[in-house]
Length: 321
Figure (cartoon, rainbow, N blue to C red):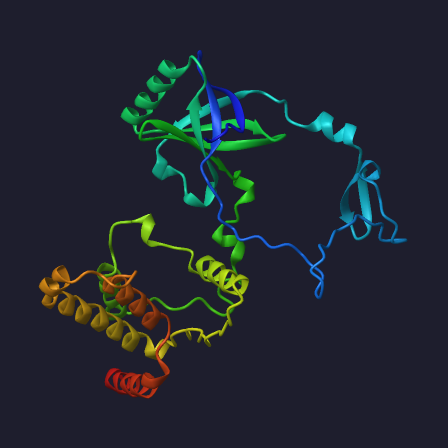
């Protein structure tokens, strides 16, 4: 059973709705311990002073802000505690906005908000009102001694709260001038290239299904750990990094990607009756493999077809000239 990590109330106008905060994420990160090679003894880390290498007890550690190289402004725990935001138990709604008005780059950590005891009716009223209004609440609240900006929106019969980054924490694209494009910005794509790219996007477009996306690296890592724990021999297959598509090969890569998708779709339609009669033996559908192959083709041409693509590219270049 999920446990609440925070409790307080949603406050706007004269309305206060007692709520509890629950994590909406269950991280599946594979964690490792640091061990000494040879005997597997656990490795511990100690806080030591840089000047003499002596261990420093926790109560003797203060916070320092480096305002210049090796120059620090020191703050004590008492000074820091005086600056901490007031530990209010209120989620104060500032505005109601359209969800499309918030760029996803501002979203940070998701949570669920559930009603506290006795607040079920007021909570259900707020959920339904926000559903009908199609609005998202922008609010402020304090969690773990830090003030957060948050977006609250209904999802089915519950409210979700997602912490947000403040405006000055997000870099604008203009801040990256000279970093994203080291040389001059690329010229505007030709209409034929743009139309071909749009066709490829359309052919790979589908409804979002979160179940079909898996952390393949974590699955392979867990499989490796399981095999090693069972004492089995582990053999690694060499992997090849996809090469970026060069500008002259762009049209050839787009054409080949579209041909791969259309060819697979025709093959799938022709074998539809056979596929219905036979049980699926692969964990991934053919369409999934096709989309993956098409994506890889657009990202980089295969080495066996480099010569053909370059020849096609040269012919097209001469035709344009």
